[in-house]
Image (spheres, rainbow, N blue to C red):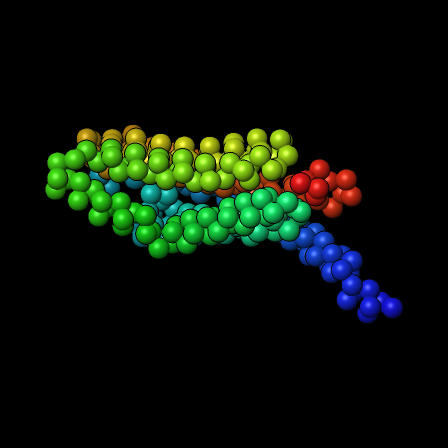
Length: 246
């Protein structure tokens, strides 16, 4: 009888729910560890810049903690954090009955996975550098490049509007807050930092502060997303969970 039960639809649901419980618990531990890492790595970054200044020779360990350097601890952490967010979003899709919500969560998971990979391969920075050279050769303002990025973000937001309407109001607010924090760092602060660097150079405290704030907002936005999804996965264990019927 037990074997037959596991072969039934109810047994599959029980197995899925058990896997959800385990995943939610592990993601919760990762969320707590991520919060500690964000505080520590930014503290080390500020301490390193203050101790070394702009004219000092950089020791080998500096690149490991510098948030404005690629292929180091902050980069790998950001990529891993976004990958955890993608896994959580994919798992959230399994908690819904609405096709719109399921497709929306899976699309969010796909986007987060792509951004996670981009953190490692730095594709968007290479494309941006090539685009800036192309714009400079035609005497066009580089601000048009960032305007194009804003259009892409707005297009993604418009595509996800039906999905946002399909989730509960409290969850929708939290999603918008986490996305707003991340986009503010990834787009707004990056534009400000690049414009400042173009006028005043890279080796000055103001640019270091802007670069640190950019990464801090990106990491915080991803952390907020991981938090809201892990809490929602825990709430999904309740029989009267609001979003199960959506």
